[in-house]
Image (cartoon, rainbow, N blue to C red):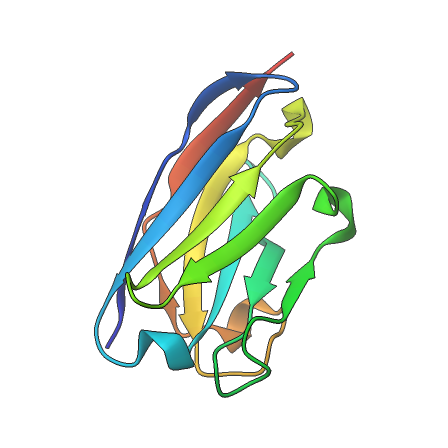
Length: 126
């Protein structure tokens, strides 16, 4: 079992930055592929960024096109934590952001991930 707790969300003006954190409890954190997803009201949950576990091309990352060059995902396996640095935020980035863990190759599909946090709200004002 893996428990995930997100933090770092908030209200920011367009062009600003936020860093989300996701603290994981449980064993073998480094083995899990970690993902960040987001869900806006009335929309489906969508993949934002992912980072592979150490046994699956560890350190490899993947981003949805809309955040490439603005968001960076990273992980600290010693701290059981994954981060999402978000720069140049836009109003369309407004959503609840969820951290997810899966014993899977790096994939964008929601169904590939087995464990989910409760989410943290990010609101970007124009």
